[in-house]
Length: 183
Length: 91
Image (cartoon, rainbow over all chains, first blue to last red; front, side):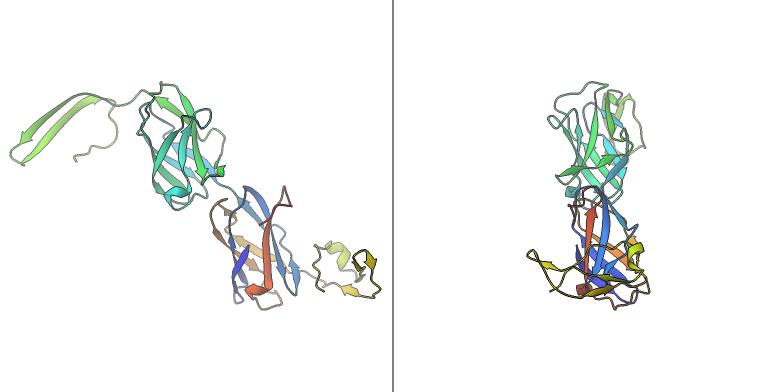
């Protein structure tokens, strides 16, 4: 690792860790005159965990927005691609990121061209760029299920509101949830 | 010639001087070098953050003991992270 700064006032070294396979790493420090510094207990944990996904079930058609909670995520969308995998990579469904920070990813499940059946299940896989996957802790934390218990539109009616000078559309159906939106 | 040693066993090194054997290309060098060890070792006090993403660059701050006897200069230090389960893999 490159030592990029040394602050004698605070006796602090700043080093740049460039990445490594997941695991536990012992930090070793050598001074060119003093020799090895005792670094017992200075352990760097390299890895990324997913601790929960919410919701853990979504529409058989896709489109569900999912919040993934965990550790050591990146800061730009391309750092952590997300897919729903069903027994391997073939047929995986992308989950398109809309927000990301070090502990939270928000993504929306892509359109599912080959319709799923209620009860189909898979695993929400959070990739660490291309080489590794985030670890699910516990192992069930990434389980994903498809459901057909989804909103259904039964009718739509539009009328012109001449007082406010706009169109109003009344949508009727079942299983609507969430807050009322007027736009 | 400069050589780097691995870490000493602390219980073996505070008792006195250590003699050295020098072998170059299989030939034993006649010498009377003696290595005396310091009676105490300086320890690092902290690592922040203590976890990092496997694929992203991360700045790590390592705090040494306030009693560290040398002025800190980044060019004087070598730092690595060694995989505990596979010590041949280090960064």
